[in-house]
Amino acid sequence: MTATSNRRIVLASHPAGKPTLDNFRTEDAPIPAPGQGELLLETLYLSLDPYMRTRMNGTATYAAAMGLGDVMIGGAVARVKQSNHPDWKEGEIVVAYSGWQAFAISDGSSLRRVDPASAPVSTAVGVLGMPGFTAYAGLLEIGRPQRGETVVVAAASGAVGSVVGQIARIKGARAVGIAGGPEKCAFVKDELGFDAVVDHRAPDFREQLAKACPDGIDVYFENVGGQVLEAVKPLLNNFARIPVCGLVSHYNDAGEAASINLTDTLFKSLTVRGFLQNEFAERLEPTFLKEAADWIRDGALRYREDIVDGLDNAPQAFIGLLEGKNFGKLVVRVGK
Ligand SMILES: NC(=O)c1ccc[n+]([C@@H]2O[C@H](COP(=O)([O-])OP(=O)(O)OC[C@H]3O[C@@H](n4cnc5c(N)ncnc54)[C@H](OP(=O)(O)O)[C@@H]3O)[C@@H](O)[C@H]2O)c1
Image 1 (tube, rainbow, N blue to C red):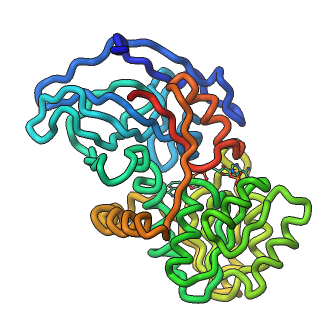
Image 2: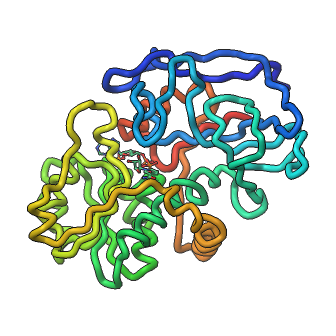
């Protein structure tokens, strides 16, 4: 069926705490027409990522906040439907920052070409895209795992965490994952090959984590904060490195995030370093994309996608992401 309108989801209100369906509004707008030097993109897969919650608050963070009525921001895999641009051809597949909508106009800047022959195109917003690259850059540039060291990562079955642990193992380190629930834990250990995994929902989580890290923790890749960070802190070794990638357990609350105090940082000679993946953007292509594609081909890097059908289901899926309901990289199939 050919689309006759541009289905899109806009920010209807700023969430107070957990987002609800009322914070989103679905609209049908005319399909935009590309001007000279522009392209019309048709969304195939929309990426849903935790950072979107921080942009819904109406206050600027590291990036501008979304305004009420704005199309929800987000990365997507799209097909060039129409091109008035000399560098882009109809039918090409690209990664674009085109938001929660079926169609979008682009001037061609900040698009990345995707080779549909090399991998399923949805992976261009997953293991072979921003989340995979975040894991790679944060772990290797900041965590710098050495052979035999212990690397701990939470949200270990997710888009970033799954890649962190597997790269740690590729580099000869011991990977310990933290995940929510027995099914995710089994996947992290049995399918992804982590050395150990601990369920952060278990009543004896702290004890189990200590048991899984008999030599302490050398790299803690921070994805969640909260209770997980509290359990990790006493296990940190001297000279441990902590790439601070995300704090998903705090995105729905306005309170203070869990923190590492300067006394611990001093006495244990810790390196605590926040980062946004685009800081390392020059290593995305070809370095990361080539290396990751090789690892996938060799079976050293595995991935799992959680694909939800239909743009209309994006708000519910996004709400679930912040509660751990996704199992793998969360994407929405928007078009065919
Ligand atoms: N710095 C950067 O440039 C950058 C780029 C991309 C992503 N990130 C960050 O990386 C982190 C992971 O992102 P992702 O895309 O890979 O998401 P994801 O792991 O695919 O999904 C989020 C996961 O977080 C866990 N979670 C949610 N609420 C939690 C809570 N209250 N306590 C503990 N765990 C909770 C859940 O896993 P369990 O059910 O297993 O707990 C959930 O499945 C996020 O913090 C994100 O903001 C940062």
